Image 1 (tube, rainbow, N blue to C red):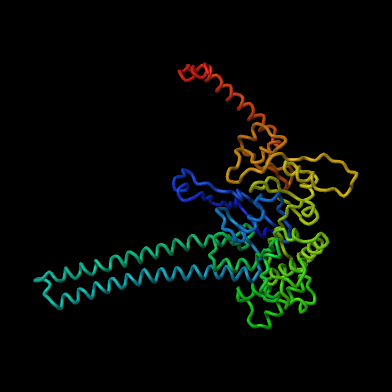
Image 2: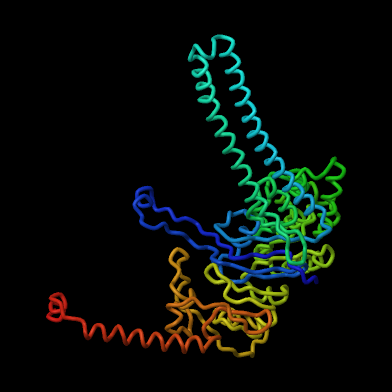
Length: 471
């Protein structure tokens, strides 16, 4: 496994604007948002399996879709860095640079072309005026010169603005091309145009959760797997397309490929449907796969086969996975690192062994205690969370987990805990890990409450206070 990052997600936010009707939105003082993903940051190394876990509705799938821009992120950055010798990555960077050079040339041509046309028009007007009248005896020349300037000035002004806009666009967009600390070229996926994003998606693909919904029932298996090749205009002829589809089906475990190629989705089993979806991602030879709960819709007997297939593909094709699941037992046997999400935010992250055997955040501890144990005689106290998960449109102040936390303290209701490193590569957001900060805050809070109490005692009694006492 390489030590270089292939993906860096930094402070990713995906907020959905809440609409409550035309007049309510018009008169609302503050716009409301559902914060599905709120400040998520993580990195994935080449060849690694990074797993996002959490209960339903915590923002795992939205994070995955935000990385591929299937859902447009509100803010943040998604840095994708493939290997130096990667041909598609090099072609993409060349394409981006060529696009911006073309825009610059068009802007310069528009500006200087309009400038030349303006000067030529003025010269022609002067020449025409001199041929009609004597310069010293008639005012016609001044009129023609004035008219020429009047008509050409807006054109020149508009052209200069277009040129400036083109230069500004070039400066903004070239920020999509980044050079990392180790000299590798990288792309900020969020700053790519739609045409350029097509190239990036050849290297980042997604396996969807439900193969019954993600496969078009009117298309054959061959057409489904070949569609990415057609959309990206990769194959030069039908023979090349057929060979790549057969190879993808064979890699996905559908052997022999000829037996499945001309079937429709309803003519294969659930596990085979998911393999067709995996083949559709492999046909473009990607580097990173975002797997959105790829086994949750399958029978238990088939899940192991799909996980084994994904592990074999990682070793064979040097793939990297962002694996999304709500099942901690699957994450334990499959992933290298785990990030635990709650209400749109990662609250704990670290190597799989450390997260499972030494969880530090109360939410992680609660998730682990309810995982079924294979030993029926084993007795372990389960942590049952009380209450419902808060509404993402109204996230609690302070620590977002405090309404359900069994160890809640007063500081949790007022302050957001910072990331605290427990050991190398393992951190959590919880005040239980920083007792010195809690003690300091409690002292300051006690002083503040005492001051407020003294203010109430020394404050003059108003008529309203007298009425309240009588009532």
